[in-house]
Image 1 (cartoon, one colour):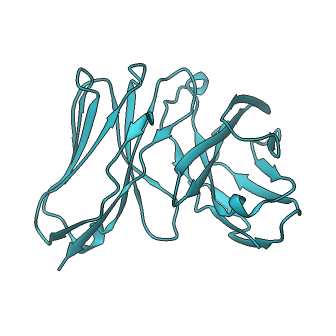
Image 2 (cartoon, each protein chain N blue to C red):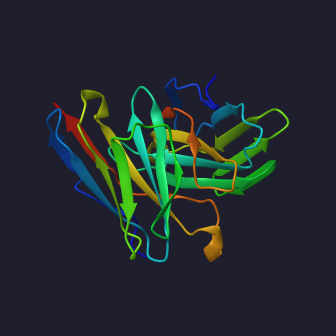
Length: 111
Length: 116
């Protein structure tokens, strides 16, 4: 079983819709959770960084962590065509900088 | 502040050759990590360097190696290239906890290596 599972299926939504992405994980030592956005032919860009369980909001983005269920989510409100990218979840147990990544979701926002 | 830079951006090599990739971290970041990204395996951790010392290593063969210099710049080397080494190699830097930072990592644009 992979440490981090992220259904890699592409997601197409109309402009203005809410995008919902999620990851599950098996390593209960993970405490730090991140979401990255990666445009084609670019490096991943850090979007959200959270520690332990709870919600964090930043503009149109909301990250949720439920450690009891080993489940994290990212919500994008009022999605824009510029949000079209691959979104990767990543997590760390702390104590070192090794990140475990999900495989990523390709999101397409249709104008 | 300038972001993470990686050179070269693209490389084409032949099986059996070796390659060296370079990474310059964000100013003040002493931790540099390397990742391999492929369509099949996604992003996989190669190794991390901090203050010129390898601090963590992923599950890659010994053909993959790296080093870090006193100015925190890092290089990774792949010897005896195989077709399966074709990938996007990403470098990430972070302001380590020792320096008052966190586990946030910032990625460069990557070096796309093609092995023929």
